[in-house]
Image 1: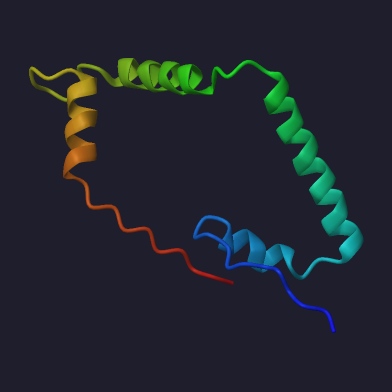
Image 2: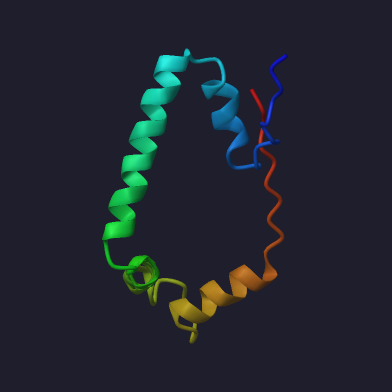
Length: 94
């Protein structure tokens, strides 16, 4: 008897899993290889993802700075929006 070691996918992975679990085993193995290779590339690179994310955020905020009409800069507005938001993420499953 074959037992399943699969656990319930996270909310982010669930929509992908709903689609991927129907694929044939050879295609799944190909995807495993591609995902593994992409992770190896990330491990070889210096850990600058947080700095890169911050640079992208700063760039985006600077682009829209001053368009909000008021005395606050973009970082202050973004901080307030994050604090005041009640994000509910409903993910539809397939």
